Length: 482
Image (cartoon, rainbow, N blue to C red):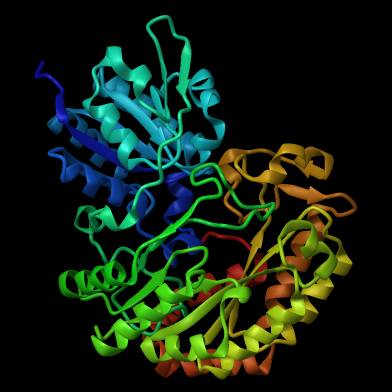
């Protein structure tokens, strides 16, 4: 048998649920985000003389298992690496076991939010997992790849088994990476990029479009957010790097609209101002979306962002119940938030509200308050997630004291009510969830807003028309399948 190629690594983004569900899942089909973390690590290793490939099972579910088998048999990589969320972890374990059966001696490495939260437990409970990279992957994975087996104890942020089967974790912290030193992600390694990756309908004006990450971490400590990878650190690319990154995407892939997948795009005002001025003085013919916290925007900044091409801003509202919000996030001020939403609209930018239903402490009364609050504001669209307590979030530690929780990892995708707050029941929460969406779409101002998308986002309407009955069933029943 030919030896393993020690310089060759296969990266896999697992699907996370059954293939027969994926093909007909309207929520997947209409929102496929590129695995930017894997693409970033691949580019980092390519610069250091490794040969990398990426198979994205989420974007290409029907072919992915066969593609992995073929790659393993033909290319014989020494390492197969998985980046997993909670819902995709067990699918990653399945694929790791398949890889070991097909190619004995291959090393399986896991990274991402779920294993960074589980840490030693990921190896103790899952024999198919050989190594876990905790936190940021670039430096740790590279050091692992160049370190002989007898020296692995020196690799910081690596969890592994010794020859006796003992799980060992070197939890020595690494200095945070300077993000401007990183190469642009290896987008070209993603099959059918960018066509295979499209933002949610009515979330962009034109295509091709894609997502981009310009920061890592978040300086805040909300109860529901996973903190296992970046902890409380927060870093961001400079305005110059950001403009060069977008210019690269425009030149190489003709990208015309970007969604910045950052928790806090406007946290550093100076960076945003410099970026916007660069987009104005050296225009790229691109528009962009971003997510912000209300504390870090004002009318002057919003007007500059609009001039630079900002098309939509998302804000985390979470709930319209002031007391409930104060239990879960810092600076809970719904009046201030409402004022800032009005400022975004005054600047001529589309507004998307991000909400959750089912937080600990939620009640029918608090859900009614959320509906009244959201419908009183000039919000163009919103996303209502079903609260899910993830292992890396602060609230996970005592979640069983706050309600009933079905901890089924494969279902933990914020699309299902697995946690039920005390005093509530699942059936009623499902009814209220559907009612929330129906009430939104019944508002004349909202309906007119979607009509204007005929000329503001004609591609969205084409996609909507092609999946009309699937969307209708989803809105009526909250069922994901086509």
